[in-house]
Structures are given as C-alpha cells and as structure tokens.
Length: 293
Image 1 (tube, rainbow, N blue to C red):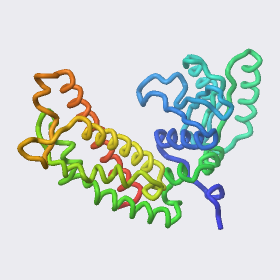
Image 2: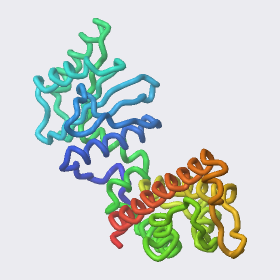
Image 3: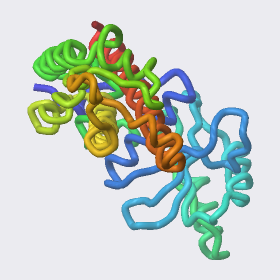
Image 4: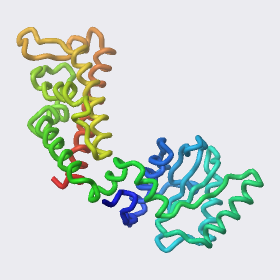
C-alpha cells in the first residue's frame, strides 16, 4: 500500500499557495511555528517566512515558485535582499518548486561556505522534493493542503462532524445571527438564546469533536476559546430582568451609575461577538471548501 511519502505530490501553481505549503512543511520537520512575513506588495527584504529551525536558530525562507529552476543571479539577488532583514538571520533557505539541480546546488554550497567564513548567514536550497518530503512528516498538515489524498474514513468523519456543527450553530435563525445583530448595551435578551453556544462549549471540548483537517481543527479550537470567554461574560456581567425572569441584560442603570464598567462590559461583548461570528463563518467556508458540502 503506498504511503504519503511515496505519493507524487503536485507542486502548487500559485506563489501564495506555495508559501503556505512551504511554511507547513518546515513546521512539520522543524516541529515549531513559523510566521509569514508581510503581504504581497510590501517590502519583504528577501524573506517570505521566518522563525526558528530545528536547531533553534533564527532563519528566513524565500519561496520561489519557479518550476524551471532558479539561476545563480536569482540566488545572488535573494541573498542581497535578505541582508537587510531584521533581526539578522543565521541561514537563508531558498525554497523552489523546481526539481533538484546539481549545478545550482554546487553553486549554493560554494557561496554558503564563503559566507560562513566571513561570518555571514549561510544559504541552503530546498527543492520541491524536499518540501514534499517534509510535508509528508505530518499527516494533518499534508491532508490540509492535499485533501484529495486523505483516507476516505477521515473525510467521512469530518463531514459528519461538520454537519453536527452546522446543526448546532447555523449561520442564520440562531445564536450566531443574534451575536451578529444584537446590541448588548442594556437591551434584554432571552437567556435560552445562548443555549446552543453553551452546548458548544460544554460538548465540543473533547477528542470526539476534533476535525482531522488541520485548518478546520484550528478554527474549531479558536471558536471554542472565544465562545467560552463569551459564556463566562454572560455569567458574570448579565442579570435577570425583574419583570421577566426568562430574560437577562447588562444592567442599563450601569450606564449612569458606573459608566466605565458599562462601556467595558458592552465593548467586551461586542468584541467577542464579532470574533465568534467571524470564526464561525471561517469554519463554514473552510468546511465547504475542504469537504465539498
């Protein structure tokens, strides 16, 4: 039976996707977290990704989506640009979608040796075979970028879990819509409105409710964190309405008696609500994209 590492993985066609794949691949093999540098149109000083490698050294990565290879002049240019990156790096990795090339490898080895002698950062090449091999070291990262290779059982399980998620927290006619539209500045609400959000906090914080797909799982965890923060705020800063015990509110009298607390509580509610709505929509979009539902 073929393994992930034996699969012929197609190189990304877009530069943005190649940066994402390279970042994931290096995180998989270096067992750390890297950061993308800036965005398209901004000066990047020859570095697309930065962070610590497996040795704990601060390094930079330049991604070249060049399937036909990189030239000596391109290598020289990227080295020159990376000299300005701050703080200084110990190694510049140049990743390319091109296959291995012995001539350019020899050139980079010589350049890197000369630079080390001078006390400058070293240079290494990462060809597409290297990137693909590193990515294959972490199944969750691999399947996040190449879901078409994911075992059918993984995809089926994620589809079932995604259906449960959407049923509990639909985009409309539920708590998500309420969070998106409601003003918490002293206006009352039915306490039962938040039951689905409380159920999400109580029932989805376990291994049975984890997605196999990495991006979906990261979004689920982030949503869970913000939902828990919101529920804690509900418990601590809202009170039953005297005329209707089924409704609660941020006490409207705080606006006059304790305006600083009122503004902070209402601001916290609205900030968390925006974050929950935003993350929820990301889960829905990613689920549709990855699972094809």
